[in-house]
Length: 125
Image (cartoon, rainbow, N blue to C red):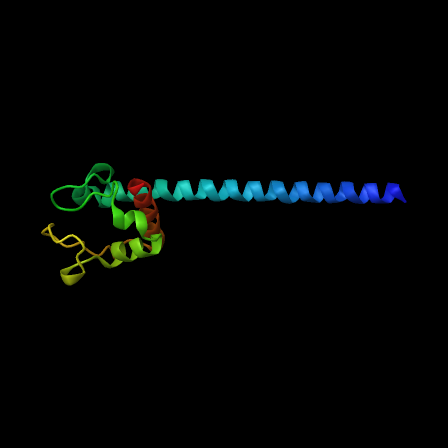
């Protein structure tokens, strides 16, 4: 009878190890996916946003910096994505000292916008 319990315990241990390894694998894939998303966002940022926001998001006379930016640091990727997609002008402008408004980026796909927003979050840290 004890032998049956021992086999049962061993089978439970194997199952727990499999579940644990699966969770580790899933977490690793998600981490790599997030890094890849931010990397794609960096490329899009460099192509579309650098002229106004500067290399590495350092800011220019035309648009604010993202390094240490409180809005970027405290906002969700969805909120940042909405600003990228829809722009900010008039009363919605967050930084009135900049003469130009944030233009809407309607040509970017939702995935590209989310990738840029994710990249911006890395700059604000």
